[in-house]
Image 1 (cartoon, rainbow, N blue to C red):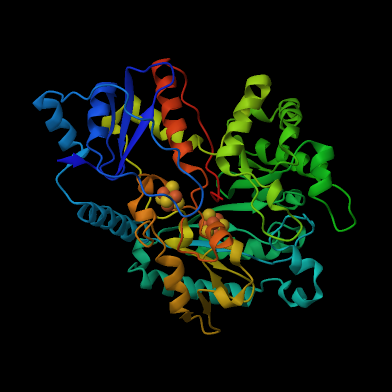
Image 2 (spheres, rainbow, N blue to C red; image 1 turned 45 degrees about the horizontal axis):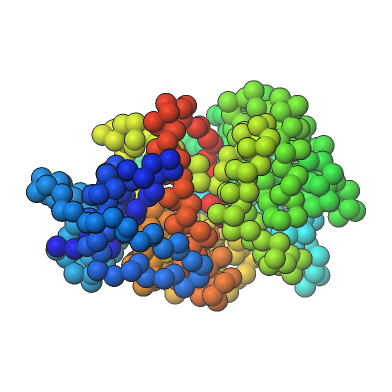
Length: 498
Ligand code: SF4
Ligand code: SF4
């Protein structure tokens, strides 16, 4: 018998006597004595493979004599998946089988995002669509979606549902997102109204948007949990810092308008998730922003959440040295939180992982094990429609017709771009040999495809983003919080993990 290739060993701060073992595909989480952990580790027949990009911290050497535990313990270790008689290859096949099964389940239901326009009233320098509004070559893209296009897309959605094996009775409720450009401009209101009307004419619907919130007042009557119930809004720092980056075409800032509309949405019961796009230039502005958030009174609302996201280089206005990976950002935010208690409201990139681990420690029996075979819905059932009735899998790649996954024809039939569909929808941890050998595979999902492509030129590669360190740190933190009986952190869902 050997140690499984998919064990994650988690050191616990403050104790050398115990550690946690997590099994990558059985989903087991166990606290064991260091002796038992050392015994298991002594049966590891090879080092974890190195990722193509980034680095994993290697486990410390075993510095105690290895003792075989009792037969009963060895049997439990075997049952929980930590010890196995399978060969490396056979185990990798088990992981792939789990991934394929999950992928089938997760791809069952389509998800929809409408982009009423690629146009936007702001000119944020780091926007991946910046060129569309500044380079006349792309001006043709800035067209508004028409009612005819919406009609076409709704016919197309019915065909897509059939392709997913769903009939009208299986689709009683549709969850519709809006993205842009800026989807919630005053000018786009009629088309947003029409999309919502059409959705509700076909059954129940829920609606959410990624919006810059500068013109949200034009949607006041739609802002409610029953209508436009969730929004994600971006702030880049306190007013002065934000107004240097999220600017109008004339260079003026947007903070004040956005803050006013966040108040409006919160008062009307909408879930507001504020995303802070952080790189090395604005990291140190976070404490001041936290103070402003408190002064605004947003933290009094249960429907308010705020989190940091590491900005990735997407155009020539950004430099690689300004970028941080999520692990570096996570640590930097934790350090700032120690010095500035008001910053405790800012959720960290991996708090959902911490919440999942907390609930496992609290009530393993009733906590469903969440595994992900792919990183985001671009690889399962996401269909993003633009104003040309073109379909995309990932919003970071919208507007590039060469990578659209299909198109809705004038008669409402759907023309799929099968090779492109295959590229997007087949990216799972089983589709590249680095992820399929990785202990973290079914927790991580393989990282963002766009970021992976940006690094390696190839989408079907791994984008680790410090995941091994982040996972171990968050699970250890959750365990210590559980022991200390601390309150479980709550959080709003974020829209895209990138
Ligand atoms: S996580 Fe990456 S691949 Fe997925 S939708 Fe976001 S940018 Fe696209
Ligand atoms: S599963 Fe995640 S951590 Fe593991 S190799 Fe792939 S991208 Fe990296």
